[in-house]
Length: 43
Image (cartoon, rainbow, N blue to C red; front, side, top):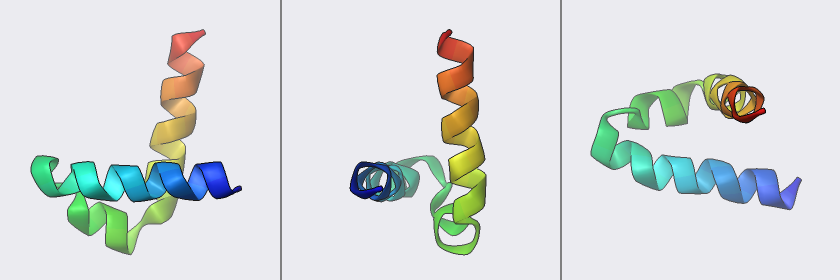
């Protein structure tokens, strides 16, 4: 779980550059879905 939280924190930092910061603060579940989707697409 710590690794996942670190991932979210990393996304939050990236979000400042991409305009997803609001999504980061308001809807962590969206990032979780995005993260899961990206893992799925890699396979």
